[in-house]
Image 1 (cartoon, rainbow, N blue to C red):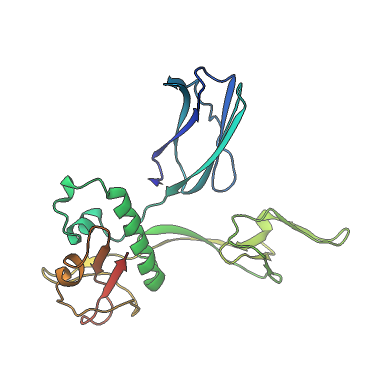
Image 2: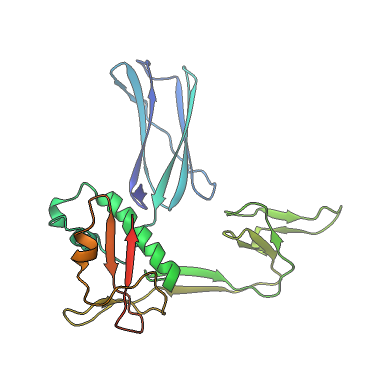
Amino acid sequence: MIDTGQVYHATLTLRGQSIAPSTATLVITLPDGTVVPGTTPGAGTAAGPDWVISYDYATTVPGLHKVSWQTTGPGTAAVDYFNVRAFASILSLAEAKLHLSAGPGSTWTSDDDELRNFLQAVTEVVEAKVGPCVRRTTVQRVAGYSAAAIVLNQAPVITVTSVTSVWSGGPAWTTPQLIVDGDAGIVSVQFGAPPFLVRAVGRRLRVRPRGGPRTIPARRERTAQAPVGQPAGAAGRGAAGRGDFYYFHWLGVQHPESCTRIVAR
């Protein structure tokens, strides 16, 4: 998986084809369904008995992307998908490596991408309990008076194009008039001009004096408890192998005698 802004290297291999095809087209579809313009691949090069065509695309948005190749002379077609990650983590990569007891992080880099996946997963678990921790900007549409909601039979939903009455001459509503809860699959019609609320969410890390736990202001919700002062090595480093990811992260809940332990396996 790559991060937003990284380059995705799209390739198409024509087996047993020693020369360039007559035509080759590439279509990259973004997560919202729009097509990236100007994705014209080069002629390609020979790679032994095969012909390889490639195209480098600099990603701009996170989410699932679709890649569609098509050639003539010979006629082929291939479809692939790739994910772009909007990486967010309340922990650093160096902290993760330190708690895994794998030596200096500068000499251990082969598993960085996998560790970053774990770090993001840990962050999602914590934020599901205590709310946003990593600072980000959100836009919220504030609903005013709205009609009855429609519960769609499939969710999640990316976008709703229109809502049209089944009655002849009945009302119809377009995308700007609709309030869509994509995760829940609920659509309602908005009357009037609702305001949009733009805000920054997240938490400020504060560090206690030397020897104390690092804290994040949070409400009293936690997945597991361990006494403050319990050695991380006893439960985390010593018992964990390279295939496990144990991480103790201290959350600033209102009582110093407890902490949160995040375990991803």
